[in-house]
Image (cartoon, rainbow, N blue to C red; front, side, top):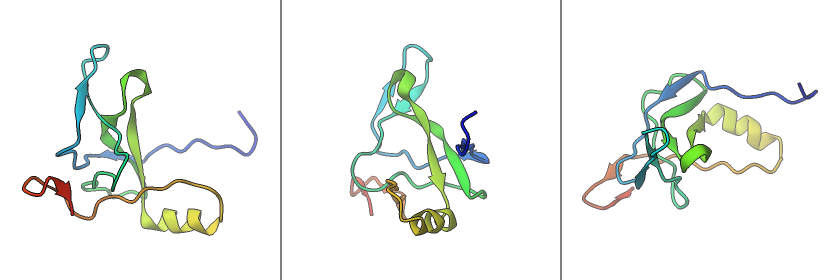
Length: 104
């Protein structure tokens, strides 16, 4: 245990809108894994009731894959108030539109 350090564990897992996100099949674990979004918004979560959740889907490659952590606006405002260097990417406000090929 490191003094002053805590580990965040999500209260629940929720599906996210992965339509249009590129995938790869992991031969090691047999799971479909999604590429981590590097531009635009993170996929929109569905049905989250807790302030801190993780996606049910796995993002990343091989052993480096993870379930995407997602936080509420209330937690975001508290983190922002700390004036510390954090990288937080907003989620899409609308689902992926197949006709447009993007989230709008």
